[in-house]
Amino acid sequence: MSSNKRRLWIAEAKVSKSQISMSFGVDELCFSTSYWYSGIDLLEIGQRYGQPALRNLVFHAVAFEANKLGSLKPDLIDFGPYEDLVTPEFQKLWMAIFQNVWAQWRYENDLPDYPGPEIKTSGKASSSHKALDHEIGQLQVLSFVGGGKDSLVSMSLMEEAGIPFATYGYSSSIYGESSRQHELIDNLVKRTASRRHHRHWVYDDFIDSPVLELSGSTIRTLTAAETPSSVFGALPVALLEGYSLLAVGHEHSADFGNLTWDKTGEEVNHQWGKSLEAEILIQNYIQTQLISTISYASVLKPIYDPVIFGSLNKSLASVKATHSCNSTKPWCEKCAKCAYVWINYLAFLPPGAIKGMFKSNLLDTPENQIWFRQMLGLADHTPFECVGQVTEARLAFELADRRGYKGEAMTMFKAECPRFEQTSQTDELLSVAPDHHNMPDWLAGAILPVMRGNAQLTRDIVESLLGY
Figure (cartoon, rainbow, N blue to C red):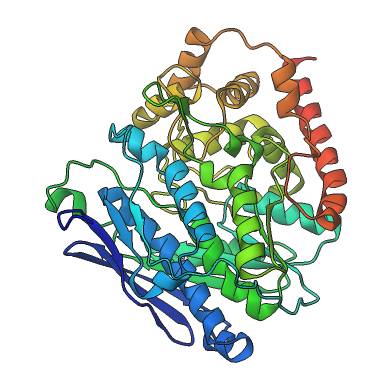
């Protein structure tokens, strides 16, 4: 390999009872990320399952954190002390995640021909090592909680279906003060039927660094595969505490992209890491390569955002404890995520349900006008955020209009969007797709009937407002 190639390198991580400390970099630039866990002893993994098992889990945590350095456009990646664990199966998964999650990054930086870093290997890695079996406890479900409406609906579905669950609260330093993030998450969790709550902290000095400004790079944006990273980061908790299912709240709309890139013909999807495709890839890898007795699935995958927001009518007392902003917790009121959640709260919840949650009418906020235009299909693509499709946004605007909400963005919607008509696509948004999920049968069998009831509740709200 040529010596002038830019090299993404990984150093050996340090592990203690509560922390995994990671170091990596690109050429002379060095970065670090640390994971902190409450209520478990990471070293116990080595005692119960052997040091190779602990080392393998740590390697995967490091590898999927280090992929964010791919944003600096390295030519190759050197896994260094973990090179013997770089199996063909691992390479396939790592590159699939990089190529799909970084499609947005390549689009933003006009890099249609960049394939990602070449993976340096020694050829010594075995692809035949046996995945672990672990002892499954009575409490099987570990439900991820970010603190938003998806988390609330996921937990409410399981509670109504009679599925006991524990919760896993995740914070990251890129979203601000960690104690504030956990305070908000804890406030939501305590309103649910969670049997036990785990906390996970991530401290990262890359995404929020001035690397693009000070390194002389021509790259304009940074990206991280946060969802896959969080899944691999949760495996030590599941292994030690006996959970058999890592449950997340990723909706059907996450399977659809923001645009088709004309230079490559590929779909660019900001939410690919939350897609059913990614979910199945990650679960299959975990079960065949790491821990055969752990599943990974979204409990919301059969439904779209309208049914998720409609389901909140069963949990109105808890809605004010939700937060969804990725900029300033709980709400910055000026980003695409805040704008999208706001218009859907107005559309699907009764007047007064969110009184006091927001300080202003987001329909009038100047910064939000571009987000609303993008959501409504009046720009080149939908926002690069975790928001729904154009039809979902137009349905939300129509319902909010019928409820009498006004503002600059509503005026724009009524002037520039075609008259709203209920179509087969609208019907699909208000339905349950019973086979579109990766849930184990025992969970799907309990949740789908509850979900159908929520879909009917949502349909009744929509048809009442639309006069059907």
